[in-house]
Length: 355
Image (tube, rainbow, N blue to C red; front, side, top):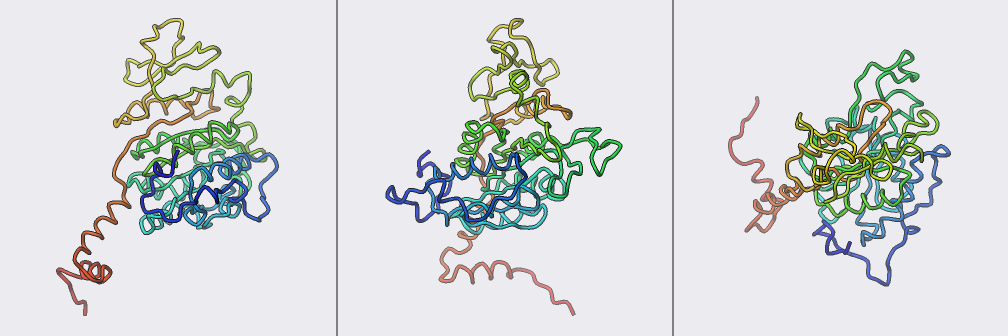
């Protein structure tokens, strides 16, 4: 990916080849404080090593987080950053992205932070298509507050807050994002460095809201939540790789595949029972999100016996921040003082005096 391909037309100060940054340049002097074995370490290292590929100065990158274990991220990156308040990171990032076209804006959040108190902010950021990248760390538990069930915990989950088992029906983050018509939706795994990095690259190159769900293990309060997709003995049958333009096959030696179901969705079949031409070919660029949504529903609410991994949707649509700036620029045409012109527009028209 070259600098010319990056979706930040207002950027200034792109590094030259002489001062090309490395992963070490994006590593802060703060001691990383997560529990031993936490999946956050792997994601942090992948992000630190990936950021130099953006070809941007550290001053042109900002990470905004909410509250939770994942939300310590800005402390560990030597970029601009903000540890904001619970659930509000997408709202704050929306303001930054709208005001500052020259910044690459990233949100780091967790399943509790994003999908519980922050759910409303999340869906509207995706609906508006604000130019930001949202990394949603999903460990299916509240880790920072010591092990309560979260909006993605499976039914029957026994935790400190649900000693008799959760009776909640969980969110599927990818389904939620597709329902909000996000223009880029993907899922990856903390322990798969190559796949994680490739998805982050695609997200960074996308202009608009990019949501990346990252399956991330919490070894203290929810260890083993993703064993099915990480265990060498089961992951071939559990992971359904989504590769653009290729028939969707999975299982040992591609023994399973996906076809259209009579209900209109998709279903798993044995590839020995169908012709290759019947297999569903993955196309993330379809403007209609129906097929992507059907793929997302293959992930159950239990122990994730099967889960599509990859980019579900990647389409182009005008962004909220570009359109907002365009309106301001239009209102300021011919004015010596653009701010005065905007003030006149806001205060113009019918007014009332309240006495």
